[in-house]
Image (cartoon, rainbow, N blue to C red; front, side):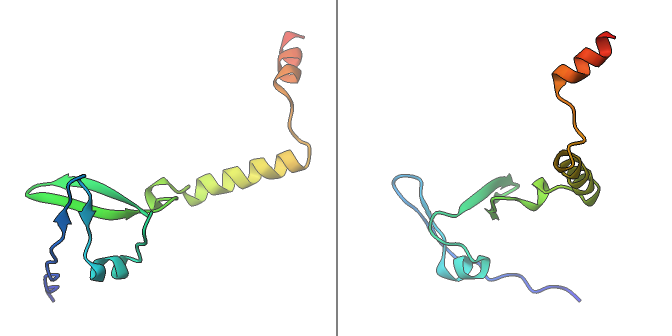
Length: 92
């Protein structure tokens, strides 16, 4: 089944290059004043999308998250060594 095209909305570019995003789109994307948006140039236009503090492209994979949790556990248990200790052991 083909998805119907989204309704096109019109905004305005102000004197200081500010773009007014239509209210319906702001509400749909849950954007508020001060939120960040990312711009990507595309053939024939520009894609504007919300940019969250922790973008899903920048989040750890499950395997990476496990490694970080394991390392933090070792730190809490005192199973770490300082760089000076490692250098001393290597000099022996």
